Every structure is written in structure tokens, then in C-alpha cells.
Image (cartoon, rainbow, N blue to C red; front, top):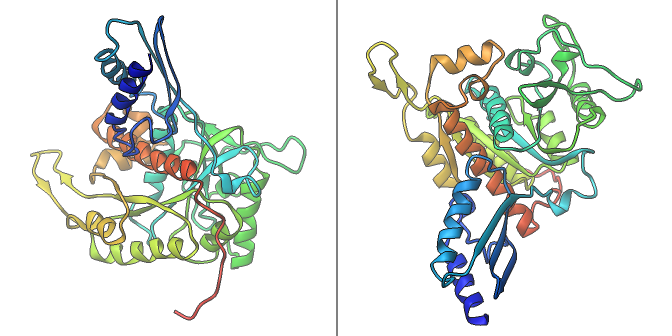
Length: 362
């Protein structure tokens, strides 16, 4: 049986998880391997949500093991366990395992649309997900989630119950003020409001809290990085040079405060005419990929410039909820799985310590 066990282990080393880039044995995914006269039992645990691919992974492992099992019965179980970073234990937001900051450095690149669809894609893959609208001055998530005009409740006068839409928990300053009321607040007031929204919301057992960041690299971004254990950041850009300049600043800001970069999302990469099918790179091409290569981070995905994406977000039913089996929803699912796999690698490696904020002359 020792020989058979070694053969099974060799087979598991040959199977590379395409999302983590690691094999299931050395990558820590193998929870249990039992080899005896009754057969071979393999128990594999994935560290990222993968509802749509669990059966594919189970079948792949089963075929590899049966090739060396010599006719013995083979049992394969594949499950998901999403962990929190070890560094987050001392300063965690109650009810939240991982915090994902979605940032751009510049407005108008579709960051909020990417953030809400990322949250919905993670939920569609089986995770428990929330979204926090951190744009105090221009909240857009209430509209995108179809919750405009809704008001959260406070059961004890101190904490707030999150709103919910499309299976995702949500909180925004937009739920608490009139839609036309401008937030004429200085920086400390805005950052104080963000902290309250984060810590006073009664998040319910979230695997991921997606934070839709405001544009720029100012007070709110630094407050989030300094006081909250952010697992990683996703940078959204368009291929246009002027957008890439600011996206690079946003990426460098997270690097300076030691927040891991999960990857880059290139939005509005290609436009296909709805009348004639002509393809055109309106904002240029390849900018997001070049940026990812320059900084040694993954390109999580490239999204098209599509009228339906805007219409669906404006109507309160974003693309992943409106057309879950569509081609654009598939791209969002791939982006979500790549980002989540990056967080799983960080959790397994024990990295992602709380950053030390220092003021430097730059």
C-alpha cells in the first residue's frame, strides 16, 4: 500500500490548480489521503469559492487516481474552505474574513461597476459576500443594487443591519442620507463615517467584504489601509494612457502601505458595435496588461465596453445578476476566482501583515 500511496501522491503533484498555480499536494489543498485494501479516498479542499468548477476538479482528480489504483475503489471529495489571513485576527472587522479594496486612482473607469459585479460573482461561486460603498461623497452602490430609497434598521441604536440585494449584503452612506444631499464634509468627517460604516454594520459571516473605494489616493484610502486588515487590492483601469497614469498611482499607494495587489482589471477594453459587429479599441489596447507586467501582478481580466453593462447597473440589476450565463458574467466569474485564489495563496503563506504607515519625502 505504501507504493500505491506514493503513486497517488505523484499523480496529485502532477495536477496543477489553474487558479492558484500550485499542485494539490504541495499547495496544501490535500486534507486527507487514505489508501488501504478497501480503496483510495482523497479529500481536497480549495481555498477559494468554486461552485461552478467543483465537479470538474473532482472528476480530474478521480481520473488521475484511477489510472494508478489498479481497480480499487476510488472516492474523491472536493470542498471549499475560505480562510481569513492570520494577520487579521487581532484587528478583524466582526463577521468578516477578508476585505478586498477595489480602487482605480481615477474616476470614470467603471470601478463601481466592477466592484459590484465582483461581489456578485464571488457570491455566485458560493461565497458569503458583502459590499461597502466607501465613496462618501458620491455613493453609487444603492442605485446599482436596486436599493435606492431603502433605509437600514438599527436594532439597538448603536449598530446597523446591512441591506441585502441579489444575495449580497450592502452598506453605503447613500442609505442614510437623501440622494440629492451633498456631503460637504472635510476629510476627518468622511474617514470617521467610513470607520463607522465598517465597524458598526452587523456583517453576517462574510467570506469577503468588497470595498468600493472612491477615486484618488487620499484620506479614505489611507484610513482603510492603516486601520483595517485589508487582504488585498484590485486595481481597475481602462487602456487609455490618462487612466493608466492614475491607476499606477493607486497601485503604488497600496504597495507603500504593504497591502498586497491581487491584480489589475482592464475595463472598456474592446467595443463591439451592436449594429454591425465591428470591433474597435476606443480607449486603446493592452494598457492594463502592460501595467500588470510592469509591476509583476496578474491581469485578472479584460472587460468590454458594452452598453448592456451600463444599462444593467443603472437599473439595479448588474450584469452577473441580470445575465448570469452570459459572456460578460463569465469574465467577471473568472476575475473573481483569480482574485479569490490570490487571497487563498496569501492565507496559506501567512502573509498580509498590517502595514506600518510612515511619512516619507517622495
